[in-house]
View 1 (cartoon, rainbow, N blue to C red):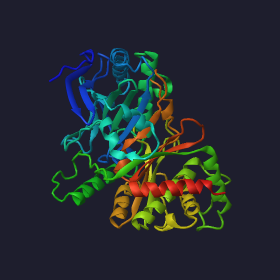
View 2 (cartoon, rainbow, N blue to C red):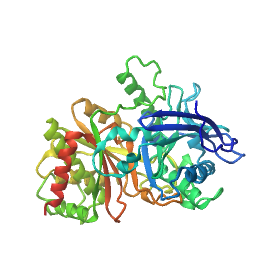
View 3 (cartoon, one colour):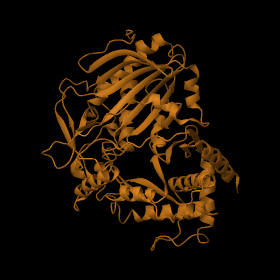
View 4 (spheres, rainbow, N blue to C red):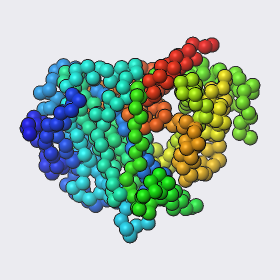
Length: 492
């Protein structure tokens, strides 16, 4: 076994396994468990709320940040002696503010529900790798379609079993004379998108500023679970729902619903991954087009709400992209039944509202009340936009109604032949502001969108007000999608 050339790390905070394993132009040099740096780190446990339990066995969220490095920073000697030690040290210091990430989800026999537990010595798995394919880094930054599986080697595995589940794993991959990537695999039952982004920004802040102790107030996580009220017993209902789903998916399952093993969907074959920009002008054009046909197309919207004077970027983007996906899929695979599901951040919508730095899940999933053929109609964008807008308005009245059944209802629709379209990420997270001290990322990718038909959202890098859309589709469907997408933007 070849000795790794990575520098040794402070053993009070990591347990390191040095190795060199080569596959597919990748070399895995080291696996480390990074613990919170504070010597006073103590036992820490945190309950899971009904917002968390919804995602208990859902596949994790995988994201990759790509960072170019100029010479000499991208020289192997500089990277391994300067960049990497800073990344590891700052990760350890950041984890003292985020102990749940270094722990595990467990479900003891005496407990009615699972919870997060951190014990001194626990840590986040960090994989350190090098990619020796000179073209792969630049290829990854390209928005054009490429084999979706290419990103898989840049994201670490997240461990789960019947008895426990890891919360997060990380991978830093060095591309000699190019830059590096950070792959994040996070358990959705512990972090929603806002919490995940808060952590990565806190890590970047600690790395760039060399701060060991303090964080900006907006990056300090709030763990107070008493802020989430459950007067109607949603926790019990959701746990029971997972038990029913487990037995339906696997009749041989003998866990009685107490398993924490992730029900990870297999990635599909022949998928290509691509990124598309909806510029601010494109979105304004879509909004204007929808509003001009508001009274002429589709049914009336929510009773008590008049026609809006404008539409949100989210409504316009999701309506346009989902319709383009549906029309491309329909043309390529003769599918004609579609549904759309999205999550809404509940922090500001709860009564009373809870702080933006609340750490954990505080999102509710909802299925848009569309007819199965709405997406492929001539004015499908107008119809679907109205339906999404109506659903968002209804959230003001019934925020959490039905959230305990939304995942099984979505699964049931898929079994009936619907093609379900999901939404991941947000253009409000500011992922392109995540600077570890060597510049902002050149690309941020939601890798896990290849687990299903999912729209990945982020803000555009170059222009305020735009949306970057990531997709992983069958190659033929992607070709049709591109044609429909760009053709639609050219229409007046």
